[in-house]
Length: 115
Image 1: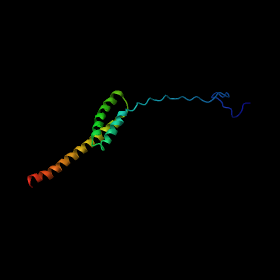
Image 2: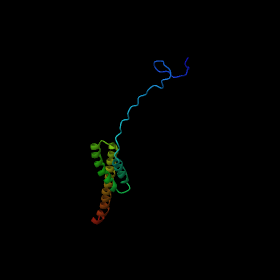
Image 3: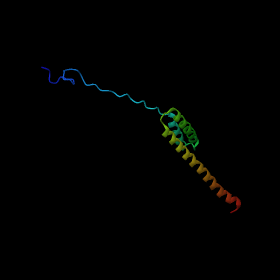
């Protein structure tokens, strides 16, 4: 008589081990383009540098998007955000300079004309 807790196989014979499991192969995940993250970082740092690094972030963002199309890497969203943030920061800084010069022109232009 066999032991009641002894494992049995599918045909009922005792002691043939555990059932087989089939492992699925892992899909290879594309590598992230690190320059895309650098584009976003440069654009954000543009707030502190008066837009200088934001210009670099914009240029790098365009280059990275072309590179990602060619290589199939991930990071296109980071590059896009780097472009958006860079353009917004540069636009705001240009708007601030134009506003500042208009204010100076109105103040000092009016004084020069004797108004």
